[in-house]
Amino acid sequence: MSDNLIINQKMIKLDRIAAVILFIVILFYAITGYGMSRGLLDTTLAESWHLGWLGLIGLPAFIIHTFWSIHLLLIRRNIWNIYYQLLERL
Image: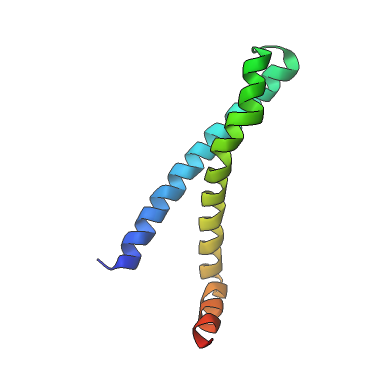
């Protein structure tokens, strides 16, 4: 197997893991936000999760997921190939 194929397979797995993490984080954002506004959850716990931990977990997952999706979109539209060819000429 070529190195590019192995890298692509690992990036696809990483992207799927990041998407699942991002989905869970968004659900927890909704739960903690609703819990803070309605008083259903402990306010300090919901606030610390909503304003602190969920952002630290969600931001890297969001970056990985969007980077790989944009990368694949640019490849499908042949924009990445044009950009790569321009870089090779420099």
